[in-house]
Amino acid sequence: MSPYGSLRRIAPAAALAAALALITPAAAAAPGAGTGAAALACPAAPDATSAAAVHGWGAPDWCAEFDDYLQASDWVFYDSPGHAGNGRRSSGQLYLGEGTLFLYGMADGTTAGLASRHVQAYGRWETRIRLYPGAGSYHPVALLWPQEGGGNVRSATGEEIDYLEVIDDPERQRPNFFLHTPQGQEQAHARVDMTAWHTYAVENGPQGVVGYIDGREWFRSANATHSPMSACLQLDWFPGQGSGGEAWMEVDWLRIYPMSSGGAG
Image 1: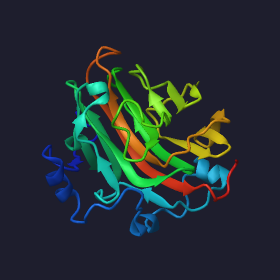
Image 2 (image 1 turned 180 degrees about the horizontal axis):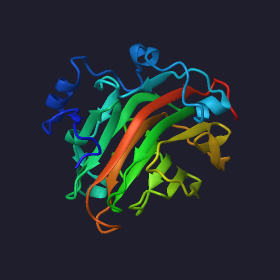
Image 3 (image 1 turned 45 degrees about the vertical axis):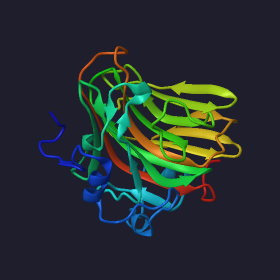
Image 4 (image 1 turned 60 degrees about the vertical axis):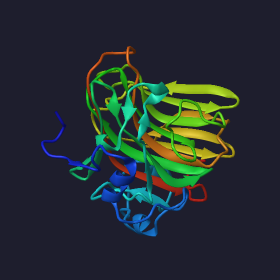
């Protein structure tokens, strides 16, 4: 059962080429090519408690509001085996409704993931997410992954920033932050009711990484990633690691800011 009575599927569960043709008639652009139209559609002011507002990040370079449709020129839609080969990621598990994007994971491991084609090595990323109580075996994740999306288990560079990951938490109360670099893994944990709306953000620059929830710092490291990174949204299935069943992840918006804008540093 969906959180809302009526949702629009982004694409049917069919071959990816056919699915993308239904999402938009525009031809796919090269990764890293943001669309000016998407940037112009960004609201003038973000949520007052967002990191962008609290720390003065200025205007985003690119944003997704999930109001009408997703363009293939902006997104990589996963159509592949799931995390570690478990289940399957399908574009048919992505839905739009009430101005938000939904990722839906079924009990059999059929789930969803997508990655922005707008990539940058350093900058700031922020998204507004609401989760629903569901299967503990499903991990909702907002992350940065080396260019082309987070479909694999390990990145080629050893770099990854999970600025929100929920692990074996059916009630969605324990957010986690993970930074993966060649120097090792670093992490942070918090207690937050993620069934309410919150913003999750990360700042990655040559001097290190800072993570935020609703504009408040909860992670800081002097290490950083240095590859061009893509913002990814995933609902990953870990069968046998937590309760079974379905899961939903709802995303209101995603914004990407340049490092040159103002901020806490």
